[in-house]
Image 1 (cartoon, rainbow, N blue to C red):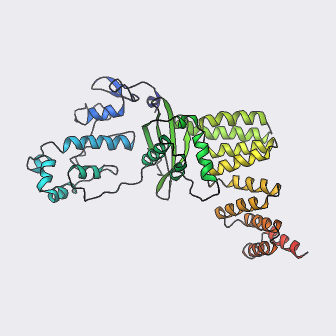
Image 2 (tube, helix red, strand yellow; image 1 turned 90 degrees about the horizontal axis):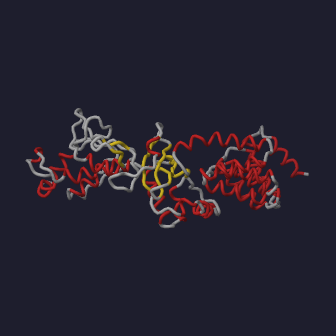
Image 3 (cartoon, rainbow, N blue to C red; image 1 turned 60 degrees about the horizontal axis):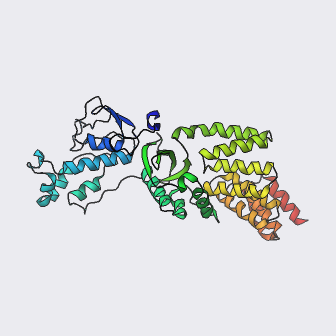
Length: 394
């Protein structure tokens, strides 16, 4: 990974970042130029990126080691472009392109005998051979999600970003707030290109990162979560993936400063962290706590709301936002956030009791009674609901 962080340009294209040593010319080059070279299959054995074939599973297509799916797919496509025009002894010494003219079904039957990697561009191969009526389906790809995300950024379609993220709850105003936060990030606002350098998925398949370069000069990392069989963006990081692992230490320092009511240190730590983690929901939550500490409650509400816009499932921000509104006697707003929280924690009697309290405060005692009675039936040990029912009788 350290080699990927160097900012040297590739001496072949003078554009992309040089990230690997090429033994064929003894220079560091980018993966794009590496692909253009290695598809001739003449790389020396010492090169870790030399295309390889599996003798136990013969295939007309070698495997290309890559640092991202994008690189692998591109290498395969470039190799396909060469392969379809080479004479093939297994096709009666015809090129695949020639053989496909009169023998499409035979060629398709021959191709289906082989095993292909999950991200092999089979659609592209079939299209190049004129067998476009057969469709293949690739698994969900975090890099594709990132591409759609940064394509929207480049097109200034800030309102469409939300659909590539983890945020799938229909909450009032949060989609617009998400767009406002992301569009205010200087690096993304100025983005005209994003080049993927490296990508990886965790062993459990639940998380992924896509590391690349904004405008050929700035490191940037996208973090994703595998949610409901789709890859969804969770966070932007101004830097490399290594910055992700420093977050917990930063959060600990902020929490410690808050616990000591040290507002100056809290503000300094949060402000510094937001430069690296500009859309981190936890940092907005901590800043909400800071505003509470210095008794600027309206600003606290904004930051708790922002943290929910960045992570629709950050339950603790719902609690604070609901409570702040109840203190201000804004019962309708407090009810809204308590009800939304109850959807996330439907079996929590305390949250449902807060919903009932909001109805009672607004004068709807029958609705409040109905909720508390249901809580008592389902959670007889929960005394708060029983006590509130007693108060209604007085």
